[in-house]
Image 1 (cartoon, rainbow, N blue to C red):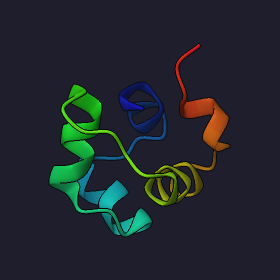
Image 2: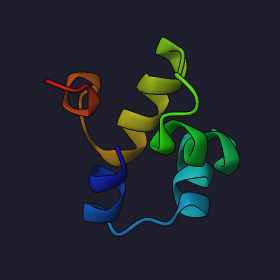
Image 3: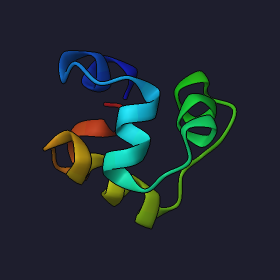
Length: 58
């Protein structure tokens, strides 16, 4: 997700604003310290202009 966020030119704060997900939660997800719910995953993917599948590891 970090790569997708950076490719979109977004900061944690701007992604948080676009997705409605608290920026500290986004940071924890990127570090692997937290697993998002499906709703959070969809919100983040939508804010990044991606499909949820695009954020999932291979």
